[in-house]
Length: 191
Image 1 (cartoon, helix red, strand yellow):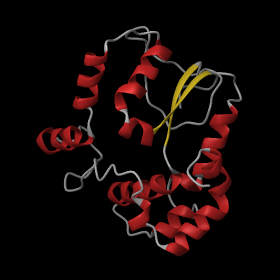
Image 2 (cartoon, rainbow, N blue to C red):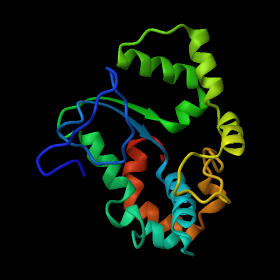
Image 3 (spheres, rainbow, N blue to C red):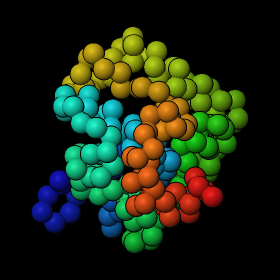
Image 4 (cartoon, rainbow, N blue to C red):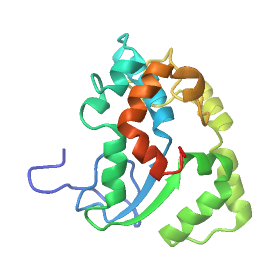
């Protein structure tokens, strides 16, 4: 993506932060890895894929890796590769669920990792501004700012922890657990 030998990132500031869905790379030196329950990830990605591609697919196709990103690497493979940290990056793992339930604490952890000091009131303001409700309102008012995103589809959809419980049929869940159950257990999502 960034040239034949090595990537190039234009630095506008230091430190510089950017989002990626890539697997670990030697040039990713300091990483904040956001982890979410894979069952919820599959449901979320299913809706994302349908909106972006404008195709009818079913959730089973996504979980089996027949369409989209899971055809390249599956959720559990992505997570396990990052947790193995093959290039010894300095890494902070944050669970989406913890970020939803206690955003100030997770922001405090992030700031400590980034070497930034902020007061609790400042962190609370950031948490409030980044709340699901505010993100939803911002999207409704300003759109998402993504040219490829269909205007008639909500990008910020549910943001609910455990959304798989009412959106993932039992037979799809069974297939997903067969492949990703060990990873879910390792992360504390299953007993």
